[in-house]
Image 1 (tube, rainbow, N blue to C red):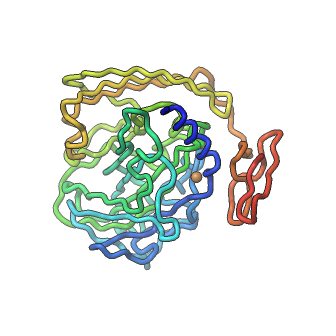
Image 2 (cartoon, rainbow, N blue to C red):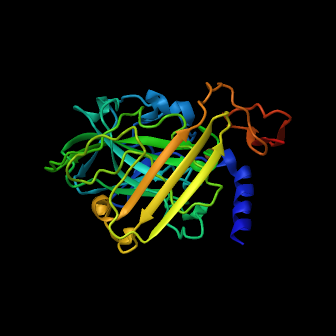
Image 3 (tube, rainbow, N blue to C red):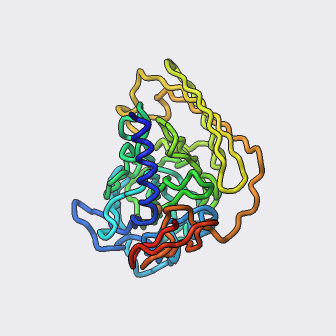
Length: 356
Ligand SMILES: [Cu+2]
């Protein structure tokens, strides 16, 4: 039964592809939605996703075409207070399965003059909120069909100007190497108060992800998502910097279930990635009842992850071809237009052509 549901999900997603993207450009203050781009670092990438090698460029900080604007506005928030980011009213909800992450980076002075080249730390992440025991489906992701993304600025955040960057992944194409889509943008925030914490672990953007860091096969059976580094700041002391590793190990106190999973994926290139993952989780402290700030210290959750490349990835070609049933043309489409070998780009209507 479950298997046929998953198969149906695969079939549906082949048709959904590029048709429903989204853009973060609103903020809700005291329940009132602000005008488009108010307090944001405005960019020119509209609702288009960023993928693969593009994640290694400076434009991965605040998106393509984002420029410093001395006339833009800065949102003032007290440390410990809440920020509510919202999607554009023309792209109102998240329609791709994947996690949400929110980062901050302190500006040396006025955030309107800061390019985001300093250190970043994570203040929020989510992944699976639905019942995952029988396998995760798209609607189990916390951000699925959501338009508002509230986050609490940790109370220990030192006062000053910050870029606050939200990102959401579309993992429907992430089974192909470099195929994960990222939707993101930066808010300009001034934190007040007298927080004296040491945020960390710290990462740089770009540098946080490689072109293939977000590879993930959502079409297999899975019950959890291996979040990429960095870990969420615990809101207290800083930690040493594990920015480039995805391995996290913490001590489990009362582990009662152990799952070992082995997945072998052939990527679009000839690279073969073998992933062995062991998850040990104590159920005596349901993580849902533990506040995010103390979770790292108290949940008995140990994840050890080992990734072994059995073949080096060949250099990627700049020309991408479009797979069967995927979009290849139509009004407003900016993606690749060449279909994979043996397929033709067939026009369905003025707005949509696909490879058949
Ligand atoms: Cu998409």
